[in-house]
Length: 229
Image (cartoon, rainbow, N blue to C red; front, side, top):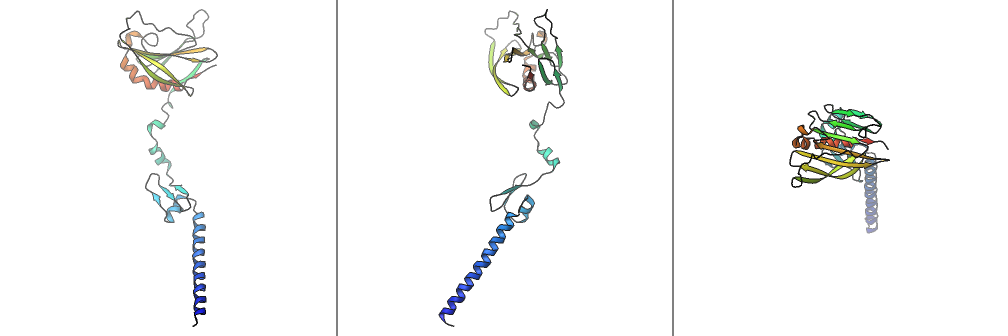
């Protein structure tokens, strides 16, 4: 066999191999394109990350997440992501609407032209030691003449109302009292007072430990508050 013929056979052989290889890669690429689920990706033998739920990656850069059942979704759901207000009661009047725990009580004073402190909503915990006051005017906080100059402490506290965050001062007295007095501007100025002791709750029942244990609950209640314009 002459050298020329050998060279021709080699070239033809290379072309045939190249055609076979090209066809293989073309079919492989088309097969990858047809993958449309985690199951198909996993069955094709592509890389699956050991996470939960699992994630499978194809060579063309796509990824598919392993489907999980509704039962497992509930198991994965953290307590904080569930709506703890789902079983709460809802209060609504002309000025305010909000949700509150079933064991808290509401005192709603209707509008009275002869009483400057009408239209006040008072929300108290079960023992009456901690409360929230909602008022369309400045509600006085009585300090009852106590000498508090040396016993007062203030801390920053963030309160969220209607999606807006308010940085307020939390005032604590060493004599078992604490309160926050803040305002929200609408057409008129609304005041929100919460804490222990008069007037948010009864002085004789004031409990700093009760307030601290209920603080996050109060903030959650205020996050559901809607104020009329």
